[in-house]
Length: 538
Image (cartoon, rainbow, N blue to C red; front, side, top):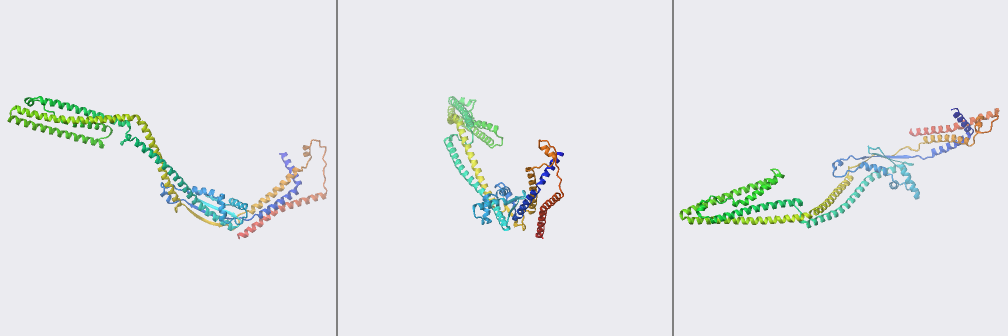
Protein backbone atom coordinates (compact mmCIF):
# COMPACT_ATOMS: atom_id res chain seq x y z
CA UNK A 1 0.00 0.00 0.00
CA UNK A 2 2.83 2.42 0.88
CA UNK A 3 4.54 1.61 -2.41
CA UNK A 4 1.32 2.34 -4.31
CA UNK A 5 0.91 5.68 -2.59
CA UNK A 6 4.52 6.52 -3.32
CA UNK A 7 3.99 5.72 -6.99
CA UNK A 8 0.87 7.90 -7.12
CA UNK A 9 2.65 10.84 -5.47
CA UNK A 10 5.60 10.49 -7.85
CA UNK A 11 3.30 10.44 -10.88
CA UNK A 12 1.39 13.47 -9.62
CA UNK A 13 4.63 15.42 -9.13
CA UNK A 14 5.71 14.56 -12.66
CA UNK A 15 2.36 15.70 -14.07
CA UNK A 16 2.58 18.94 -12.06
CA UNK A 17 5.74 19.90 -13.90
CA UNK A 18 3.75 19.96 -17.17
CA UNK A 19 0.67 21.70 -15.80
CA UNK A 20 0.90 24.67 -18.18
CA UNK A 21 0.95 22.41 -21.22
CA UNK A 22 -2.04 20.51 -19.85
CA UNK A 23 -3.92 23.76 -19.16
CA UNK A 24 -3.25 25.02 -22.70
CA UNK A 25 -4.49 21.77 -24.24
CA UNK A 26 -7.59 21.84 -22.02
CA UNK A 27 -8.41 25.40 -23.14
CA UNK A 28 -7.96 24.52 -26.81
CA UNK A 29 -10.19 21.45 -26.50
CA UNK A 30 -12.78 23.44 -24.52
CA UNK A 31 -12.88 26.20 -27.15
CA UNK A 32 -13.21 23.69 -29.99
CA UNK A 33 -15.90 21.74 -28.09
CA UNK A 34 -17.85 24.90 -27.33
CA UNK A 35 -17.73 25.99 -30.96
CA UNK A 36 -18.97 22.57 -32.06
CA UNK A 37 -21.73 22.52 -29.42
CA UNK A 38 -23.08 25.91 -30.54
CA UNK A 39 -22.53 25.35 -34.28
CA UNK A 40 -24.62 22.19 -34.53
CA UNK A 41 -27.86 23.23 -36.30
CA UNK A 42 -31.20 22.81 -34.60
CA UNK A 43 -33.36 19.82 -35.48
CA UNK A 44 -37.15 19.93 -35.59
CA UNK A 45 -39.10 16.72 -35.25
CA UNK A 46 -42.37 15.95 -37.03
CA UNK A 47 -44.42 12.93 -35.97
CA UNK A 48 -47.73 11.20 -36.60
CA UNK A 49 -49.54 8.28 -35.01
CA UNK A 50 -51.58 5.67 -36.92
CA UNK A 51 -53.90 3.04 -35.42
CA UNK A 52 -54.57 -0.12 -37.44
CA UNK A 53 -58.03 -1.50 -36.62
CA UNK A 54 -58.10 -5.23 -37.50
CA UNK A 55 -61.29 -6.18 -35.61
CA UNK A 56 -63.80 -6.45 -38.45
CA UNK A 57 -67.23 -8.10 -38.47
CA UNK A 58 -66.46 -9.64 -41.88
CA UNK A 59 -63.70 -11.89 -40.53
CA UNK A 60 -65.94 -14.17 -38.40
CA UNK A 61 -68.64 -14.13 -41.07
CA UNK A 62 -66.23 -15.32 -43.77
CA UNK A 63 -64.54 -17.90 -41.55
CA UNK A 64 -64.17 -21.18 -43.47
CA UNK A 65 -65.12 -19.59 -46.81
CA UNK A 66 -62.01 -17.48 -47.30
CA UNK A 67 -58.53 -17.27 -45.84
CA UNK A 68 -58.59 -14.35 -43.40
CA UNK A 69 -55.72 -11.92 -44.02
CA UNK A 70 -53.17 -11.66 -41.23
CA UNK A 71 -53.25 -7.90 -41.07
CA UNK A 72 -51.12 -7.72 -37.93
CA UNK A 73 -48.32 -9.66 -39.59
CA UNK A 74 -48.58 -7.65 -42.82
CA UNK A 75 -48.46 -4.29 -41.06
CA UNK A 76 -45.69 -5.48 -38.74
CA UNK A 77 -43.59 -6.61 -41.69
CA UNK A 78 -44.33 -3.35 -43.48
CA UNK A 79 -43.13 -1.32 -40.51
CA UNK A 80 -39.82 -3.19 -40.63
CA UNK A 81 -39.32 -3.10 -44.40
CA UNK A 82 -40.74 0.32 -45.27
CA UNK A 83 -37.41 2.04 -44.61
CA UNK A 84 -35.69 0.59 -47.67
CA UNK A 85 -33.76 2.38 -50.38
CA UNK A 86 -36.46 2.12 -53.12
CA UNK A 87 -39.08 3.44 -50.70
CA UNK A 88 -36.80 6.21 -49.53
CA UNK A 89 -36.13 7.24 -53.15
CA UNK A 90 -39.89 7.49 -53.65
CA UNK A 91 -40.22 9.43 -50.39
CA UNK A 92 -37.51 11.90 -51.49
CA UNK A 93 -39.45 12.63 -54.67
CA UNK A 94 -42.78 12.94 -52.81
CA UNK A 95 -41.35 15.39 -50.23
CA UNK A 96 -39.29 17.39 -52.79
CA UNK A 97 -36.05 16.72 -50.94
CA UNK A 98 -34.10 16.25 -54.16
CA UNK A 99 -34.58 19.80 -55.39
CA UNK A 100 -31.29 20.99 -53.93
CA UNK A 101 -29.27 17.96 -55.04
CA UNK A 102 -27.14 18.77 -58.06
CA UNK A 103 -25.37 15.46 -58.56
CA UNK A 104 -25.91 11.77 -58.06
CA UNK A 105 -23.62 11.75 -55.03
CA UNK A 106 -25.70 14.47 -53.37
CA UNK A 107 -28.91 12.54 -54.06
CA UNK A 108 -27.39 9.42 -52.53
CA UNK A 109 -26.36 11.44 -49.50
CA UNK A 110 -29.92 12.76 -49.11
CA UNK A 111 -31.36 9.24 -49.35
CA UNK A 112 -28.85 7.86 -46.87
CA UNK A 113 -29.54 10.65 -44.41
CA UNK A 114 -33.28 10.11 -44.76
CA UNK A 115 -32.91 6.37 -44.05
CA UNK A 116 -30.98 7.22 -40.87
CA UNK A 117 -33.48 9.83 -39.69
CA UNK A 118 -36.88 8.23 -40.42
CA UNK A 119 -38.22 6.12 -37.55
CA UNK A 120 -41.27 3.81 -37.31
CA UNK A 121 -42.05 2.62 -33.80
CA UNK A 122 -44.76 0.19 -32.71
CA UNK A 123 -46.32 -0.30 -29.29
CA UNK A 124 -46.86 -4.02 -30.07
CA UNK A 125 -50.23 -5.40 -29.02
CA UNK A 126 -52.14 -2.12 -29.47
CA UNK A 127 -51.46 -1.88 -33.25
CA UNK A 128 -50.39 1.72 -32.74
CA UNK A 129 -47.53 3.01 -34.90
CA UNK A 130 -45.58 6.28 -34.54
CA UNK A 131 -43.84 7.78 -37.58
CA UNK A 132 -41.23 10.47 -36.90
CA UNK A 133 -38.54 12.42 -38.76
CA UNK A 134 -36.08 15.17 -37.81
CA UNK A 135 -34.96 17.95 -40.14
CA UNK A 136 -33.38 21.37 -39.97
CA UNK A 137 -36.58 23.03 -41.23
CA UNK A 138 -40.01 22.41 -39.70
CA UNK A 139 -41.87 22.44 -43.03
CA UNK A 140 -39.48 19.87 -44.48
CA UNK A 141 -39.99 17.52 -41.53
CA UNK A 142 -43.77 17.81 -41.84
CA UNK A 143 -43.72 17.05 -45.60
CA UNK A 144 -41.62 13.95 -45.05
CA UNK A 145 -43.93 12.58 -42.34
CA UNK A 146 -47.03 13.32 -44.42
CA UNK A 147 -45.56 11.41 -47.39
CA UNK A 148 -44.50 8.60 -45.07
CA UNK A 149 -48.07 8.23 -43.76
CA UNK A 150 -49.38 7.92 -47.32
CA UNK A 151 -46.76 5.31 -48.19
CA UNK A 152 -47.54 3.35 -45.02
CA UNK A 153 -51.24 2.97 -45.86
CA UNK A 154 -50.85 2.41 -49.61
CA UNK A 155 -48.02 -0.11 -49.32
CA UNK A 156 -49.91 -2.34 -46.87
CA UNK A 157 -52.96 -2.65 -49.13
CA UNK A 158 -51.08 -2.81 -52.41
CA UNK A 159 -48.75 -5.55 -51.18
CA UNK A 160 -51.61 -7.80 -50.10
CA UNK A 161 -53.43 -7.35 -53.41
CA UNK A 162 -50.24 -8.17 -55.32
CA UNK A 163 -49.70 -11.34 -53.25
CA UNK A 164 -53.29 -12.45 -53.92
CA UNK A 165 -52.93 -11.94 -57.67
CA UNK A 166 -49.64 -13.85 -57.70
CA UNK A 167 -51.18 -16.74 -55.79
CA UNK A 168 -54.19 -16.87 -58.14
CA UNK A 169 -51.96 -16.88 -61.22
CA UNK A 170 -49.89 -19.75 -59.83
CA UNK A 171 -52.99 -21.77 -58.92
CA UNK A 172 -54.47 -21.19 -62.40
CA UNK A 173 -51.34 -22.63 -63.99
CA UNK A 174 -51.50 -25.68 -61.73
CA UNK A 175 -55.20 -26.19 -62.51
CA UNK A 176 -54.49 -26.19 -66.25
CA UNK A 177 -51.73 -28.74 -65.77
CA UNK A 178 -53.96 -31.00 -63.67
CA UNK A 179 -56.78 -30.69 -66.20
CA UNK A 180 -54.51 -32.25 -68.79
CA UNK A 181 -53.40 -34.98 -66.37
CA UNK A 182 -57.00 -35.72 -65.35
CA UNK A 183 -58.13 -36.00 -68.99
CA UNK A 184 -55.28 -38.38 -69.75
CA UNK A 185 -56.08 -40.53 -66.70
CA UNK A 186 -59.78 -40.68 -67.61
CA UNK A 187 -58.93 -41.67 -71.19
CA UNK A 188 -56.61 -44.47 -70.03
CA UNK A 189 -59.21 -45.81 -67.59
CA UNK A 190 -61.98 -45.68 -70.22
CA UNK A 191 -59.88 -47.50 -72.83
CA UNK A 192 -58.94 -50.19 -70.29
CA UNK A 193 -62.57 -50.81 -69.36
CA UNK A 194 -63.60 -50.99 -73.00
CA UNK A 195 -60.86 -53.52 -73.74
CA UNK A 196 -61.86 -55.64 -70.73
CA UNK A 197 -65.60 -55.06 -70.74
CA UNK A 198 -66.25 -58.68 -69.75
CA UNK A 199 -64.46 -58.03 -66.47
CA UNK A 200 -66.90 -55.30 -65.47
CA UNK A 201 -69.31 -56.35 -62.75
CA UNK A 202 -72.19 -54.15 -61.82
CA UNK A 203 -72.41 -55.59 -58.31
CA UNK A 204 -68.73 -54.89 -57.66
CA UNK A 205 -67.72 -58.54 -57.10
CA UNK A 206 -64.25 -59.80 -57.86
CA UNK A 207 -63.38 -62.81 -60.03
CA UNK A 208 -63.31 -65.33 -57.18
CA UNK A 209 -66.76 -64.28 -55.95
CA UNK A 210 -68.10 -64.40 -59.50
CA UNK A 211 -66.79 -67.97 -60.01
CA UNK A 212 -68.30 -69.03 -56.70
CA UNK A 213 -71.66 -67.64 -57.73
CA UNK A 214 -71.50 -69.35 -61.14
CA UNK A 215 -70.52 -72.65 -59.45
CA UNK A 216 -73.53 -72.41 -57.14
CA UNK A 217 -75.86 -71.67 -60.05
CA UNK A 218 -74.42 -74.61 -62.02
CA UNK A 219 -74.97 -77.00 -59.11
CA UNK A 220 -78.55 -75.84 -58.67
CA UNK A 221 -79.24 -76.23 -62.40
CA UNK A 222 -77.79 -79.77 -62.44
CA UNK A 223 -79.89 -80.72 -59.40
CA UNK A 224 -83.02 -79.42 -61.05
CA UNK A 225 -82.11 -81.39 -64.22
CA UNK A 226 -81.73 -84.62 -62.27
CA UNK A 227 -85.06 -84.05 -60.57
CA UNK A 228 -86.77 -83.45 -63.90
CA UNK A 229 -85.18 -86.54 -65.46
CA UNK A 230 -86.34 -88.73 -62.56
CA UNK A 231 -89.85 -87.32 -62.84
CA UNK A 232 -89.81 -88.08 -66.59
CA UNK A 233 -88.73 -91.69 -65.97
CA UNK A 234 -91.56 -92.11 -63.45
CA UNK A 235 -94.01 -90.78 -66.01
CA UNK A 236 -92.74 -93.28 -68.62
CA UNK A 237 -93.25 -96.18 -66.18
CA UNK A 238 -96.78 -95.05 -65.46
CA UNK A 239 -97.50 -94.77 -69.19
CA UNK A 240 -96.33 -98.34 -69.78
CA UNK A 241 -98.49 -99.58 -66.90
CA UNK A 242 -101.57 -97.75 -68.19
CA UNK A 243 -101.19 -99.20 -71.72
CA UNK A 244 -100.74 -102.86 -70.54
CA UNK A 245 -103.48 -103.05 -67.95
CA UNK A 246 -106.95 -104.22 -68.80
CA UNK A 247 -110.09 -102.50 -67.72
CA UNK A 248 -110.84 -104.78 -64.71
CA UNK A 249 -107.25 -104.47 -63.59
CA UNK A 250 -107.47 -100.80 -64.07
CA UNK A 251 -110.65 -100.56 -62.00
CA UNK A 252 -109.23 -102.65 -59.22
CA UNK A 253 -105.72 -101.10 -59.32
CA UNK A 254 -104.82 -99.92 -55.82
CA UNK A 255 -102.27 -97.35 -56.97
CA UNK A 256 -103.95 -94.32 -58.46
CA UNK A 257 -102.08 -92.03 -60.81
CA UNK A 258 -99.51 -89.82 -59.13
CA UNK A 259 -101.21 -86.48 -58.77
CA UNK A 260 -97.93 -84.75 -57.88
CA UNK A 261 -96.13 -85.77 -61.08
CA UNK A 262 -97.02 -82.52 -62.88
CA UNK A 263 -95.80 -80.49 -59.93
CA UNK A 264 -92.18 -81.65 -60.15
CA UNK A 265 -91.05 -78.39 -61.73
CA UNK A 266 -92.81 -76.40 -59.05
CA UNK A 267 -91.19 -78.55 -56.36
CA UNK A 268 -87.77 -77.99 -57.89
CA UNK A 269 -88.32 -74.23 -57.91
CA UNK A 270 -89.54 -74.30 -54.31
CA UNK A 271 -86.43 -76.26 -53.28
CA UNK A 272 -84.14 -73.80 -55.09
CA UNK A 273 -85.85 -70.84 -53.43
CA UNK A 274 -85.55 -72.49 -50.02
CA UNK A 275 -81.81 -72.87 -50.53
CA UNK A 276 -81.58 -69.27 -51.66
CA UNK A 277 -83.53 -68.22 -48.56
CA UNK A 278 -81.12 -70.13 -46.32
CA UNK A 279 -78.17 -68.35 -47.96
CA UNK A 280 -79.83 -64.94 -47.53
CA UNK A 281 -80.62 -65.57 -43.85
CA UNK A 282 -76.94 -66.24 -43.22
CA UNK A 283 -76.12 -62.71 -44.39
CA UNK A 284 -79.23 -60.63 -43.66
CA UNK A 285 -81.98 -60.30 -41.10
CA UNK A 286 -85.65 -61.31 -41.50
CA UNK A 287 -86.61 -57.74 -42.39
CA UNK A 288 -84.20 -57.47 -45.34
CA UNK A 289 -86.02 -56.84 -48.65
CA UNK A 290 -84.35 -59.83 -50.35
CA UNK A 291 -85.44 -62.18 -47.52
CA UNK A 292 -89.00 -60.85 -47.60
CA UNK A 293 -89.13 -61.23 -51.41
CA UNK A 294 -87.79 -64.80 -51.29
CA UNK A 295 -90.41 -65.83 -48.73
CA UNK A 296 -93.19 -64.23 -50.74
CA UNK A 297 -92.05 -66.11 -53.87
CA UNK A 298 -92.00 -69.44 -51.96
CA UNK A 299 -95.51 -68.74 -50.69
CA UNK A 300 -96.74 -68.03 -54.24
CA UNK A 301 -95.15 -71.26 -55.56
CA UNK A 302 -96.78 -73.33 -52.82
CA UNK A 303 -100.16 -71.76 -53.62
CA UNK A 304 -99.61 -72.58 -57.29
CA UNK A 305 -98.75 -76.19 -56.37
CA UNK A 306 -101.94 -76.57 -54.31
CA UNK A 307 -104.02 -75.19 -57.16
CA UNK A 308 -102.39 -77.63 -59.60
CA UNK A 309 -103.09 -80.58 -57.31
CA UNK A 310 -106.72 -79.50 -56.91
CA UNK A 311 -107.11 -79.32 -60.69
CA UNK A 312 -105.62 -82.81 -61.14
CA UNK A 313 -107.94 -84.26 -58.48
CA UNK A 314 -110.99 -82.72 -60.15
CA UNK A 315 -109.92 -84.09 -63.54
CA UNK A 316 -109.39 -87.59 -62.09
CA UNK A 317 -112.83 -87.53 -60.42
CA UNK A 318 -114.50 -86.47 -63.64
CA UNK A 319 -112.70 -89.24 -65.53
CA UNK A 320 -113.83 -91.86 -62.97
CA UNK A 321 -117.45 -90.71 -63.17
CA UNK A 322 -117.40 -90.89 -66.94
CA UNK A 323 -115.92 -94.37 -66.83
CA UNK A 324 -118.62 -95.58 -64.39
CA UNK A 325 -121.44 -94.27 -66.53
CA UNK A 326 -119.91 -95.81 -69.62
CA UNK A 327 -119.59 -99.18 -67.88
CA UNK A 328 -123.29 -99.19 -66.91
CA UNK A 329 -124.43 -98.25 -70.39
CA UNK A 330 -122.17 -100.56 -72.39
CA UNK A 331 -120.32 -103.70 -71.85
CA UNK A 332 -117.22 -103.98 -69.72
CA UNK A 333 -114.75 -104.28 -72.60
CA UNK A 334 -115.82 -100.99 -74.12
CA UNK A 335 -115.59 -99.22 -70.75
CA UNK A 336 -112.14 -100.61 -70.13
CA UNK A 337 -110.97 -99.50 -73.56
CA UNK A 338 -112.31 -95.97 -73.08
CA UNK A 339 -110.72 -95.63 -69.66
CA UNK A 340 -107.38 -96.97 -70.91
CA UNK A 341 -107.39 -94.51 -73.79
CA UNK A 342 -108.04 -91.57 -71.46
CA UNK A 343 -105.25 -92.67 -69.07
CA UNK A 344 -102.78 -93.03 -71.95
CA UNK A 345 -103.72 -89.60 -73.25
CA UNK A 346 -103.13 -87.96 -69.83
CA UNK A 347 -99.83 -89.81 -69.34
CA UNK A 348 -98.70 -88.72 -72.83
CA UNK A 349 -99.37 -85.07 -72.05
CA UNK A 350 -97.49 -85.40 -68.74
CA UNK A 351 -94.51 -87.04 -70.49
CA UNK A 352 -94.38 -84.31 -73.11
CA UNK A 353 -94.31 -81.71 -70.36
CA UNK A 354 -91.41 -83.44 -68.65
CA UNK A 355 -89.50 -83.69 -71.95
CA UNK A 356 -89.79 -79.93 -72.45
CA UNK A 357 -88.67 -79.29 -68.86
CA UNK A 358 -85.66 -81.59 -69.24
CA UNK A 359 -84.64 -79.92 -72.51
CA UNK A 360 -84.92 -76.46 -70.90
CA UNK A 361 -82.84 -77.51 -67.90
CA UNK A 362 -80.18 -79.10 -70.13
CA UNK A 363 -79.84 -75.81 -71.99
CA UNK A 364 -79.54 -73.99 -68.66
CA UNK A 365 -76.87 -76.40 -67.44
CA UNK A 366 -74.88 -76.02 -70.66
CA UNK A 367 -75.06 -72.22 -70.40
CA UNK A 368 -73.89 -72.16 -66.78
CA UNK A 369 -71.14 -74.67 -67.58
CA UNK A 370 -69.88 -72.45 -70.41
CA UNK A 371 -69.95 -69.37 -68.18
CA UNK A 372 -68.09 -71.21 -65.43
CA UNK A 373 -65.42 -72.39 -67.88
CA UNK A 374 -64.93 -68.87 -69.27
CA UNK A 375 -64.73 -67.46 -65.75
CA UNK A 376 -62.06 -70.02 -64.81
CA UNK A 377 -60.05 -69.10 -67.91
CA UNK A 378 -60.37 -65.41 -67.13
CA UNK A 379 -59.31 -66.02 -63.54
CA UNK A 380 -55.76 -66.74 -64.76
CA UNK A 381 -55.35 -63.17 -66.05
CA UNK A 382 -57.76 -61.50 -63.61
CA UNK A 383 -55.15 -60.51 -60.94
CA UNK A 384 -53.01 -58.68 -63.47
CA UNK A 385 -56.02 -56.92 -64.98
CA UNK A 386 -57.41 -56.03 -61.58
CA UNK A 387 -54.02 -54.65 -60.48
CA UNK A 388 -53.81 -52.53 -63.62
CA UNK A 389 -57.37 -51.29 -63.13
CA UNK A 390 -56.60 -50.46 -59.49
CA UNK A 391 -53.50 -48.50 -60.55
CA UNK A 392 -55.42 -46.57 -63.21
CA UNK A 393 -58.25 -45.88 -60.79
CA UNK A 394 -55.80 -44.70 -58.12
CA UNK A 395 -54.03 -42.34 -60.53
CA UNK A 396 -57.37 -40.97 -61.67
CA UNK A 397 -58.54 -40.47 -58.07
CA UNK A 398 -55.30 -38.67 -57.12
CA UNK A 399 -55.47 -36.31 -60.10
CA UNK A 400 -59.15 -35.66 -59.48
CA UNK A 401 -58.63 -34.92 -55.79
CA UNK A 402 -55.72 -32.56 -56.52
CA UNK A 403 -57.73 -30.84 -59.24
CA UNK A 404 -60.73 -30.32 -56.95
CA UNK A 405 -58.46 -29.06 -54.15
CA UNK A 406 -56.81 -26.55 -56.47
CA UNK A 407 -60.17 -25.29 -57.73
CA UNK A 408 -61.38 -24.87 -54.15
CA UNK A 409 -58.17 -23.05 -53.20
CA UNK A 410 -58.51 -20.75 -56.19
CA UNK A 411 -62.01 -19.79 -55.13
CA UNK A 412 -60.81 -19.22 -51.56
CA UNK A 413 -57.90 -17.10 -52.82
CA UNK A 414 -60.23 -15.04 -54.99
CA UNK A 415 -62.64 -14.54 -52.12
CA UNK A 416 -59.75 -13.73 -49.78
CA UNK A 417 -58.48 -11.05 -52.17
CA UNK A 418 -61.93 -9.50 -52.32
CA UNK A 419 -62.14 -9.72 -48.54
CA UNK A 420 -58.86 -7.83 -48.12
CA UNK A 421 -59.99 -5.01 -50.43
CA UNK A 422 -63.49 -4.85 -48.95
CA UNK A 423 -64.35 -1.87 -46.83
CA UNK A 424 -64.22 -2.55 -43.13
CA UNK A 425 -61.72 -5.42 -43.12
CA UNK A 426 -58.87 -3.19 -41.97
CA UNK A 427 -59.11 0.46 -41.06
CA UNK A 428 -56.14 2.85 -40.82
CA UNK A 429 -57.01 5.63 -38.41
CA UNK A 430 -54.79 8.68 -38.19
CA UNK A 431 -54.78 9.36 -34.46
CA UNK A 432 -52.34 12.28 -34.55
CA UNK A 433 -51.86 14.05 -37.88
CA UNK A 434 -48.33 15.11 -38.86
CA UNK A 435 -47.23 18.00 -36.67
CA UNK A 436 -43.90 19.67 -35.91
CA UNK A 437 -42.63 20.51 -32.46
CA UNK A 438 -42.45 24.30 -31.97
CA UNK A 439 -39.03 24.06 -30.32
CA UNK A 440 -35.99 22.21 -31.59
CA UNK A 441 -35.66 18.73 -30.17
CA UNK A 442 -31.97 18.44 -31.01
CA UNK A 443 -29.19 18.95 -30.31
CA UNK A 444 -29.05 18.91 -26.51
CA UNK A 445 -26.58 21.73 -26.04
CA UNK A 446 -26.43 21.25 -22.29
CA UNK A 447 -25.24 17.71 -22.81
CA UNK A 448 -22.82 18.84 -25.53
CA UNK A 449 -21.29 21.51 -23.28
CA UNK A 450 -20.99 19.08 -20.39
CA UNK A 451 -19.35 16.62 -22.73
CA UNK A 452 -16.96 19.32 -24.03
CA UNK A 453 -16.05 20.28 -20.45
CA UNK A 454 -15.37 16.66 -19.50
CA UNK A 455 -13.34 16.07 -22.66
CA UNK A 456 -11.25 19.21 -22.15
CA UNK A 457 -10.40 18.27 -18.55
CA UNK A 458 -9.62 14.73 -19.60
CA UNK A 459 -7.44 15.99 -22.44
CA UNK A 460 -5.44 18.25 -20.08
CA UNK A 461 -4.87 15.45 -17.57
CA UNK A 462 -3.93 13.01 -20.31
CA UNK A 463 -1.48 15.53 -21.81
CA UNK A 464 0.24 16.07 -18.46
CA UNK A 465 0.48 12.32 -17.87
CA UNK A 466 1.93 11.61 -21.32
CA UNK A 467 4.47 14.47 -20.97
CA UNK A 468 5.59 13.18 -17.57
CA UNK A 469 6.08 9.71 -19.01
CA UNK A 470 8.00 11.00 -22.05
CA UNK A 471 10.30 13.24 -19.93
CA UNK A 472 10.54 11.57 -16.51
CA UNK A 473 12.24 13.27 -13.53
CA UNK A 474 13.51 11.80 -10.24
CA UNK A 475 11.94 13.59 -7.31
CA UNK A 476 13.71 11.76 -4.45
CA UNK A 477 16.93 9.91 -3.69
CA UNK A 478 14.97 6.67 -3.23
CA UNK A 479 13.64 6.86 -6.81
CA UNK A 480 17.13 7.45 -8.18
CA UNK A 481 18.60 4.62 -6.08
CA UNK A 482 15.92 2.21 -7.39
CA UNK A 483 16.42 3.15 -11.04
CA UNK A 484 20.25 3.23 -11.38
CA UNK A 485 22.80 0.56 -10.55
CA UNK A 486 25.67 2.88 -9.46
CA UNK A 487 25.97 3.68 -5.74
CA UNK A 488 24.43 6.97 -4.56
CA UNK A 489 26.99 8.87 -2.46
CA UNK A 490 24.89 11.86 -1.44
CA UNK A 491 22.14 14.39 -2.16
CA UNK A 492 22.55 18.16 -2.72
CA UNK A 493 19.56 20.14 -1.47
CA UNK A 494 18.30 23.33 -3.11
CA UNK A 495 17.47 26.37 -0.96
CA UNK A 496 14.99 28.72 -2.68
CA UNK A 497 15.28 32.44 -2.18
CA UNK A 498 12.37 34.71 -1.29
CA UNK A 499 12.10 35.88 -4.90
CA UNK A 500 11.84 32.32 -6.18
CA UNK A 501 9.26 31.48 -3.53
CA UNK A 502 7.24 34.53 -4.54
CA UNK A 503 7.57 33.55 -8.20
CA UNK A 504 6.36 30.04 -7.40
CA UNK A 505 3.36 31.37 -5.57
CA UNK A 506 2.43 33.68 -8.44
CA UNK A 507 2.72 30.76 -10.84
CA UNK A 508 0.36 28.79 -8.60
CA UNK A 509 -2.13 31.66 -8.59
CA UNK A 510 -2.00 32.02 -12.36
CA UNK A 511 -2.59 28.28 -12.78
CA UNK A 512 -5.54 28.32 -10.42
CA UNK A 513 -6.99 31.34 -12.25
CA UNK A 514 -6.56 29.60 -15.60
CA UNK A 515 -8.15 26.35 -14.37
CA UNK A 516 -10.96 28.20 -12.60
CA UNK A 517 -11.54 30.31 -15.67
CA UNK A 518 -11.95 27.16 -17.74
CA UNK A 519 -14.53 25.69 -15.40
CA UNK A 520 -16.18 29.07 -14.84
CA UNK A 521 -16.57 29.59 -18.57
CA UNK A 522 -18.53 26.40 -18.86
CA UNK A 523 -20.65 27.29 -15.84
CA UNK A 524 -21.35 30.73 -17.33
CA UNK A 525 -22.36 29.11 -20.62
CA UNK A 526 -24.75 26.82 -18.75
CA UNK A 527 -26.32 29.80 -16.97
CA UNK A 528 -26.77 31.76 -20.18
CA UNK A 529 -28.39 28.84 -21.96
CA UNK A 530 -30.72 28.24 -19.00
CA UNK A 531 -31.82 31.88 -18.99
CA UNK A 532 -32.45 31.84 -22.76
CA UNK A 533 -34.45 28.62 -22.51
CA UNK A 534 -36.57 30.08 -19.67
CA UNK A 535 -37.30 33.20 -21.75
CA UNK A 536 -38.44 31.08 -24.70
CA UNK A 537 -40.79 29.10 -22.51
CA UNK A 538 -42.19 32.29 -20.96
